[in-house]
Image (cartoon, helix red, strand yellow):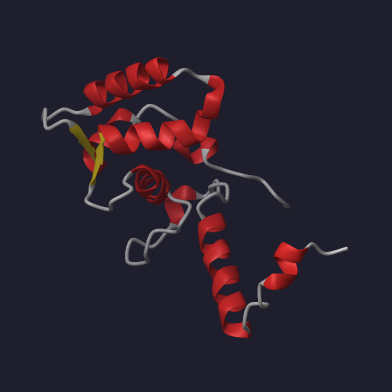
Length: 136
């Protein structure tokens, strides 16, 4: 039986539903495992959504809440709060945030740029960590 909250909302229009499905597919494409034949891509073609660089851009945008091209301490703290919830104390979260920003912030401006973000993750296997195998 449907609840009152779900019946109170009008169903999405065909265009809105199509748009949501397309948006979902675009996001999901970032998490597709990287193919093993990595050396065969034509350099004139755009990078696929699941390339290392696009996965890094996607992850960076999750933290860059105001879309100014930098992850501030405040933004990092907000995202970490959402990710860990009540499992970590506020003091621990602030300590993690301060240490993370301090380690990644090479130019000393108190924020993390995309280049600094990418460099701080250069040894991490992003291609595998940001992959979801659904069906083969």
